[in-house]
Length: 198
Ligand SMILES: Cc1cc2nc3c(=O)[nH]c(=O)nc-3n(C[C@H](O)[C@H](O)[C@H](O)COP(=O)(O)O)c2cc1C
Figure 1 (cartoon, rainbow, N blue to C red):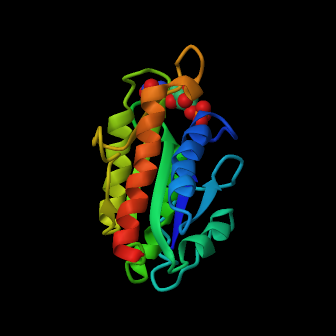
Figure 2 (figure 1 turned 180 degrees about the vertical axis):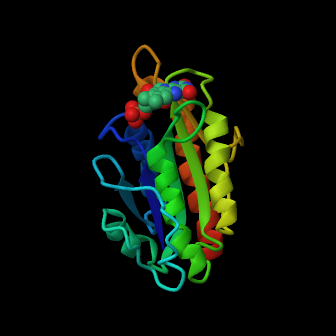
C-alpha cells in the first residue's frame, strides 16, 4: 500500500515541502510496510482545467503539461492515501493546489478511482491564524467530491489536519505544535489507510 503526498507551493523546498516531509517521515518511521512518494508541484507547468471534456472517458488530458506525468502515479490501485499540503494564499489554498485538484476530476469521471482513498490535508500560513483551517477545509471539500475518506490529525489534538506557522521567528522547523499536527496527520492517514487497504 502506498501513500502519496502532494506539495502545492510554487516555491521549491520551502515551508510547505518541509511540513509535508515531516508528515511523510512520521509514516515511514512508524509504518515501514507503507511506501510513500511525494509529488512536488514547484517548478511544474500545471494549468487549470479548461473544461474541454476530453477526460470524460479516458485518463488523459488534452493539455500537454506536467499533469500527464502525475496521472500514472495516482492511477496506481495500490494508492491507499493522499495527503495534500498547501500554503495559505488569501485564506485558502494556492492556485497550484486548486489547479491540481481540478485536474484530478478525470479520476472521478473514470470510475471514481479515488473512492475510499484516505485523505489528509495540511496548510502552512505566514500568520499563526492566517486561514490554515479554512484552507484545509477547502481542500477537504474536493476530497469529499471524490468520495474519499477524510481524516484529521487524530489523537491527541484531533482537529482538522496539519496547521503550521511559517512566520515563527526561527522558521517552520521550530513551530513545534504545528509540526506535531503534521506528524499526527501522517500517522492518522496511515492508520486508517491500513485498516481499509492494508
Ligand atoms: C499570494 C499570497 C497570499 C498569502 N496569503 C496568506 C494568508 O492569507 N494567510 C497567511 O497566513 N499567509 C499567507 N501568505 C503567506 C504564505 O502562506 C506563507 O509564506 C507560506 O509559508 C508559504 O509557503 P512556502 O514557503 O511553501 O512557499 C500568503 C503568501 C502569498 C504569496
